[in-house]
Length: 461
Image (cartoon, rainbow, N blue to C red; front, side, top):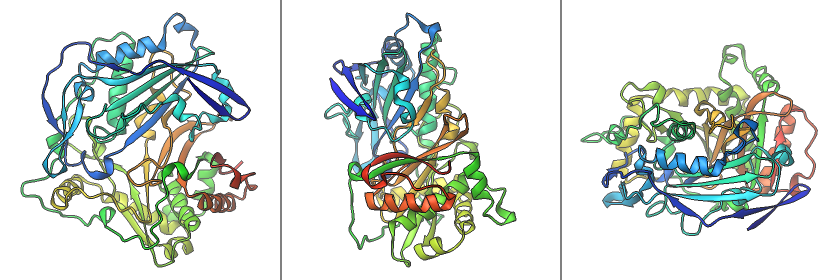
């Protein structure tokens, strides 16, 4: 049992013993190599996601725990590599041993109603560890379960579906493909509408490998300040960007850039303010890593492919230029970085990995942004309807603590559809970030900024 405190109420989460959920039918015992994109160092971490579901009277008598556990078991027949374990071979090459051991599954109950969470149904989640329990010795990259799922029933009849995935196995689109299959099985189908395709060799290095692009995202930069703060000691917040905020930012741009995407605007704003908050030397190089997926740009990745299929082309600027120039300066750099993403760029990344021993991303003064709004996490329906919130549970998760922010579709209590962005910074830098963001949108300063490590920022009220 875990006791969690949130705002003005305390609730208990009672967990059953973790169990393994194996494929419902026998599956092949074999070894499957990951691609040279999958097994790079920067993907060797776990990503937690949460989905909140309200009670649905039409589902009275149905237990979400039993429905989802059965559906996962049936889906693993098709996605049987997820039921195996990763092994590491020569040259740090990863492969799956398809052992059919299964994924980890936890059944739980919480004595709390969904409405009691109020505004807390968006990241960061102070109670994450209670609704997604880190089973001891389960979070390794190799020789560990590849998925961890916890389904927590709520007192009101709703539930929380939580999942943690080993990022080397799949990206957001691949996970959503798997979870859509689980939903289809939960609703009575006997096979996924989109059958899974492994074919990881499609994103392997060429023979012989040849690097054809400059990959600033993997530059090995010396950290002269040697500041390495663990993620659990950072401050965690979210910013909501609705129509008002987007419009405010767009009006600051010259006419020839006002047609740019919301992603470009939000990313430029956050990169610039984040840099100001970190107070680097004006001559220090700052990197913005744009997660760019190949799926929509590729003719050779088949439907059903669920491996990692994205690269992180980098925009680079000195801190002084980034902070002293108008927002349009950052927007143009970001647009140029995104334009690098092609099939040839992805092949060049794979070749770079093999030639250079699978290096990590640039750890120093980097910020990565991943737009998951197109993965449709908010549409995941096990039969109870769409989730109130669905997506990554926090920012900052990566092999470099605090590196990544996710852009997540979100509707606030006013009914405004927008994007919520969780992120992490050292505590003092977060305080400066809040002040700078308030200045951009001319809002009143937040109360108790320095007294809480977790919170939610409404960019403009």
